[in-house]
Image (cartoon, rainbow, N blue to C red; front, side, top):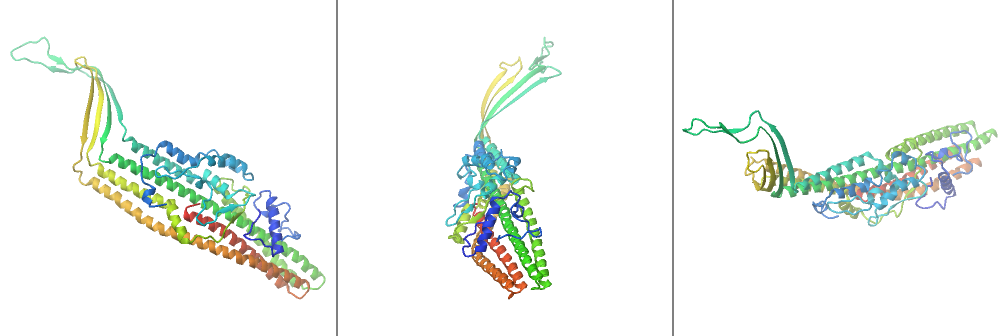
Length: 558
């Protein structure tokens, strides 16, 4: 894993050697997850393994409901996220740990053909959700240096296998089917009823004529003892006082809200993957720092031991170096354990076995510090954040539900028609056609519809208040991420200078000790300081990279 700093250490040969050795180790790595396992790198835990020279606009416009959310549109929207990745199994992804090609073949090529644009009711999940960084006004984009799995590939794989994202797809699917059901209320309905009936007596009318004592029959039959009856009825609403249109608008707004929630889930997952990704890279560098510290102390121990054998230094110097070496080896073990944990956390997010080797491409953040200010970025976030759009759509849906409840008490007019058949030889016509108009008007319902509508309006008002609070939270998130970027960029400059100074201090301390004008304590202190400064430099560098991604998340452009 090659580490690419923001500016080269051209003034410090030892740091240049460190970077070169790190690059060689990364290029020849077998993918075991940490540099110590490299076959050409001596294990600092083995005695005598000394290094040999290695050093948008209003929210209401966003979810304006329309009646154009078709089931086919749903498949376009959802399968933009799912179809391009659903054939990538966890096993397939696991086999691509050290090879980029399988992932590109199974996922990235599909994603390349599934591009879309954002509309009102038909919100497509475009390629921004699959791992491409958006260019923000004056904000530099992140870059992955080739040599391992990139952050974009990690995002694509994580989105493909994450169950939370898939569950949100199901929620969106349910909302789309609900919208389809609401639109179906406008369509004619056709129903058929069929029955066969057997009676114990033949139905008839009793007949008696005054003055006539006897008749040849006692009753007139009006039906049959066993008969078949059938009715096929069709109906279509003509006027519903806006009840159906309000239901359609409410369901369309809920579809958009689900899509925005789904997008937020993808963005949250990307942020989680980015944190794990950066944690692996940072921990790898901490392992390298610990390894170099051990190697330096092992080499120094050899020099001190030689001086002790010549009766130049006391036994106390040897014991002090051995104690410092033991402490460095302990830190190395702690760092390697931290790397194993970081690898496991990353593998879980991308759906792999926890103990699978990890090879990641290096990250750098170009163009720091950025030119855009927090106010400008906050304005961008207000237009881009899907959480704000989701709340607006949910509030819109509640308002339309309120209209739907009130419309139910208005006039409801529909057309009816049908075909009737009754098996009865006594009838002139056994089959009859009918057509008619039906009207219904609930004049008074005790205030039920009015109260239900008021409840929906209260819920909509509650969401509006939450939206205002969320706006202030987003503005704070943007400012925090922006300040973190600025701070990390300045820390990198300071840390770089500190590393150069610490290396020079260690070189001087070693020379003074060999010339018997310095103390062993000076050497140990200088070595401890150098390890600390190197760790601080790597921490600042990766904090800057992570802060850049956090700013993308805060502005909704990740």
